[in-house]
Image (cartoon, rainbow over all chains, first blue to last red; front, side, top):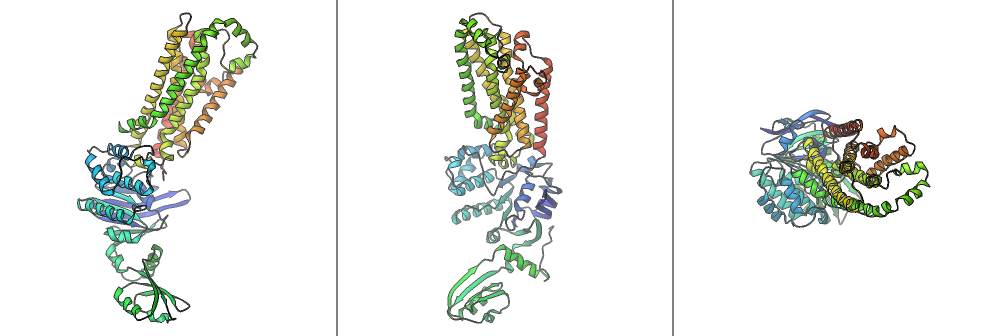
Length: 305
Length: 265
């Protein structure tokens, strides 16, 4: 069963770009990533799903109901974490969460306490005394306190330290195991890779593809840069899976690699290295790569699964 | 109910300040009344030196200023001015506080309709205005009875007092409409001060030159205090017009808000 269905969803803001013709769906129980560079239209899509803004054309359904017509009803079962968290500054965290809970016909007291404890959040502080990261935590508790069936997260990890991110991801995994569907936007690929079953990739307001993470991972790229003591021939790295070799003065070489990591490490071990960097490529590079491979037969998951 | 209570909580401070201020103003003016009443003739003589236009603009009716109700309706003009600012702040704040504080997203992702959000907030504004007026009227009534040398017409007194509430309703509705039209107003005060003073000046100017047309333009003139004093009644025409202003402003504002994309982040 599909929890979310977008059908040629389009949102234009006058002249400026919004989203164009987005169609995909998210199945029940899935952790679905929504990935793209800043300004690609991720937030616009999520905000349209929540009918904070209204679509220009096309439609979307959540739990089989139209998001515009049945918004309030749908939202009973949605937990939302915005990318930037803003609350009534003068309220205490406790009161804000109580207020938030009062919108759902449920007793959330215990749950608030549990979540706050796990996220290490001080309930007695005033909102305007909180740091960015702590505000984010309030947002997380606020989004999860009513045990929603669908959790929508817009760039959820910004401001959280790595340890907190870990806890947060564990929380999400637990919710998922309890049956919650999760839709999760991000511009950080590794984050999405860790969590998601499938991802939709969006760029400049258009959906590029919907992929299984496993497929993306097969194409996982490493960006490798080396510095050598003596100049070496860049041709040494002309292995399968190496692209975009660049050499600077013969002793600073960089390239993208996808394939068995051991092969490339063996090759690197043959050289006298002065330094080595292995990075995840940024999204832009992934996209480039995606375009390059476009004509190759791949295991594509159709946009409408 | 939760949104309504939240709104009251958010506004309780400003409500207290406004209520206390209005009560303080009425106490202050009424405590001056005995000396004016005592030296009435001299006071009138002083006033007669002023040009008629100025007196009219300031809302001074020479033939009645030394009576309790006359004096009340004189300074009541300034009570209405304050009240209008309070009401317009509240009305504008209904939407613009949520949008400029970027908390609109919080509300809009809750399982409530936009209509529900508006009504809860409006009822809260209504209650705040009622409380403010109630305190004001009670304090004024006690003061009036304390300083009055002779009996005064209680019905007229209450009709005058209630005029503030109705003028406030108009300004609250106006403020709501403005904030639905321009939800991104960052600070409410300059907008409401500007609007209220504009109408107040039109009203003063209209009084000074005895211009009938200005009565239709500015809410301050919908409740003509000398008329209320004389007839112990409101003017039906302006009652109807006032109600129409409120209904139209609230209706149009709500319509805009229901249809609008909210950009809170």
